[in-house]
Every structure is written in structure tokens, then in C-alpha cells.
Length: 100
Image 1 (cartoon, rainbow, N blue to C red):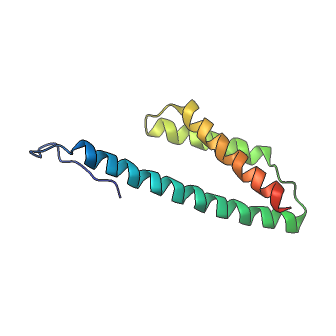
Image 2 (spheres, helix red, strand yellow):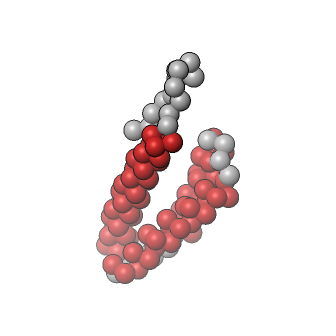
Image 3 (cartoon, rainbow, N blue to C red):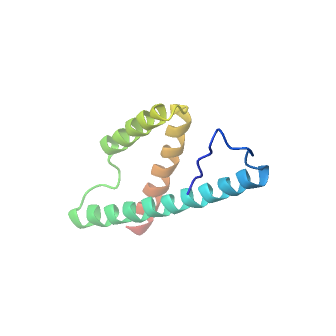
């Protein structure tokens, strides 16, 4: 879990503490990617059962729009966040194609 820092605290976190927090966050990101991939695999199974195509461009566009809005909400560069989501989508599409 991320730490919240008290602006009135006497000591600021050390470089090592900050790096440990980054490591924790990185593990959480990988966990979330794994969870997202699991759900995407489940979606692929449903698509296969229903005879639906692997690619749904409308859904991909909605994901990208949502990623951009979320980026702006957190004051992040929406183009970079969208690039990350494009990679996630491509990862999931590749896995869906392999599983068919």
C-alpha cells in the first residue's frame, strides 16, 4: 500500500524508503496486469462461445477514452497513459488469438 507523508513530519522518507515504495507499487501494477489479463481471457472465452470476433474496436475506443479521462483526473499525460493501455489491449488481443 502507498504511504502518505505528513508534511509536518520531522524526517522525510529516505531514498531507500522511496525506492521500496516504488518496488511495492511495481508489484501492484504487475498484479493488476495479471488480473486484467485473466478477465480478458474470460472475455475471450465468452466471445468464442458466442462466435464473436476477437477485436471489438468500439470497446477498445471506450477503454482508450476512459484511460485518457483517468489520466487527466490524476494530472498525468494522457498520451502516455493511452500508450500503456494500447500495449495492454494488444497483449490481451494476442493472447485471445493464441487461445482460439
